[in-house]
Amino acid sequence: MPRMLDVSQDVRAEIGDEEADQLLAGENAPGSYDCTSCRTPGDSDQERTSTVLFVGDETAVLAFAHATCIPSQVVQVSEDQLQGAVRSITGDGDTAPGAPTQAVLGITSGLVLIEGELRPALVVEPTAPIARPGSTAGVDEFLTLLVEQGFQSVYDVNRPPAPLAGWSVLLAMGQLHAILQPGTGGGSPVSWWQAHQPLQVTDGWRAAANKSHTVLIFAAPAGSIGQQPREDLLRSALERAAAGGLLVAAALPLAGT
Image (cartoon, rainbow, N blue to C red):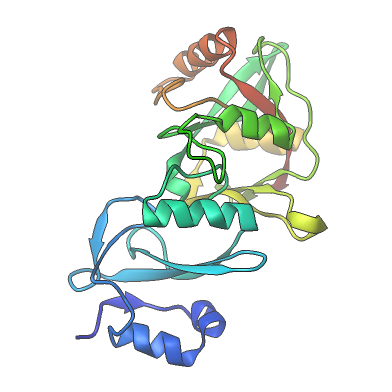
């Protein structure tokens, strides 16, 4: 029985016509799956389903997602990120930072007052503990992994974080699309986080970002910040995380407008 699958031209070009046709015919596609975006169950017999191909340096993984969550597409990731995606897709361990199940990383935008100036900031908090790729110890190493990438520990939110080379924040048509990190071996940048759909930011946030051409990224472990409805509450949550040694940050250049 044919599945309700969407296979984009980019995905078809990567996997070949034969495999794409087999997927559309229902031969190789699963009926039920866990959406690679929102991580909730899906059924390609009952609802439109996107094929998402994650391509690393040496391997590729085909995953499935609700068509309402993310369109069928090819996502370029590093090999380490791809291995994290494999563990997430198969349910074997936690997802590593940068793995392409973007729903694991929650993003909150806000203006943070630092040295008398409102700075555009993005606060990143996973929805669950993040393990090191290949680790089976179950230890949350989200902050350690980011420090290894060049992020710095924050103990005082009133001081601006240092710039981080090679990373950037992608804003297009006034909407937030992705946080990019350096590609492996000096290659093209790849998405560390990518929005399911472009995220709206406030006019004030966008104006501040365009003025400074810089966005501050704060990151904390799961459960440290939470969804704060106001910027003053977000600031208080950041200060609590910093006081507890649970906050890292970096200043990234703005790509786009």
